Image 1 (cartoon, helix red, strand yellow):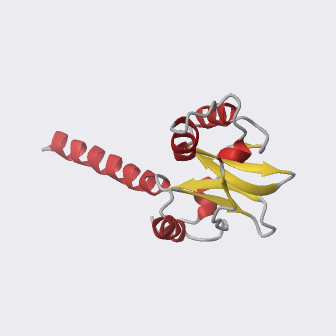
Image 2 (tube, helix red, strand yellow; image 1 turned 90 degrees about the horizontal axis):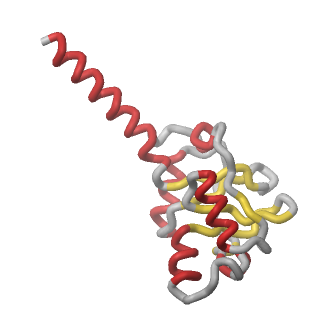
Length: 144
């Protein structure tokens, strides 16, 4: 897990993104469509912020704001920590742990957003290994 590169983790994955003038409701619909728990907020190729489920729940819903009228720029976390695609996933996990957040936008050498990693990405490889192990045990049980 720790040696997987960010570029491998985000390969083939859509980057959930929205513009700052989009509503929170529009952003949530993007999250749902992309099966993501966050969207990066981008304008003219520049990363402005990130809006996560927690931002929506605690910053919009719990405050009694209308997600149909609240602009993403008013709900997002501005200027988030980022990571490059050539870094190991373990580095992203360390950033998340130290910063107490669960998502890190991935940016290219020019700082343009190209993807998003989240803490649950660390579970993907482990879950695949667990599934393979369970299949092997079933096969061994059938032989015995």
